Image (cartoon, rainbow, N blue to C red; front, side, top):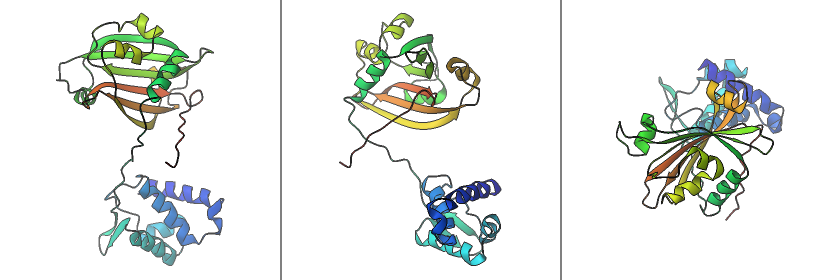
Length: 257
């Protein structure tokens, strides 16, 4: 709880120097707490800070703290129970963005064709448990594992990829993976992806990835997990991509339609 309050106070102080500086104190605190609930930072069923903790952390009056909490309760984000404190009742869930796959795959192929690809390793191996389950494999079944590093035209490495694929019959060699887009090789094996599920997050670079991307260990990386599905919804390809944000940015353009 102390760590949470320190972070919330820091966010609140930063906001005070922006558009919130003319907003009443109770609403500033309410907005800070609300944002953390809505983005999942304070998760469902988590206990909220008490009014006394808010008073001490934000250096405000008890009335200000109470009003901020009352506003959250009025929004049905928390429930306040005498003797038990306040708990979050809002369930955060990431909302997927749906977009046509036509064009997306072509963009991925185009990016591959304009990158310098170096295959670190290609082998058949038993995947980690979570990946094996998504690929519907038994504990001993293997999949094709490929580790690649992509560099830009200046030979600066910007991405580290680990992929696991089932259904590969031929043509999945180091030479082919370095000279042809991987999606093209999948199609050559009769694997036609019709849907992709993608999640974005961030990690601190572990030693092996930092070394390959020529960055400091622990540096921030954009992490993308992409599940490739065929027409019946079966996941046949899982790719984890780790990107150096200094050399790669992920951009999306969405219309109101």
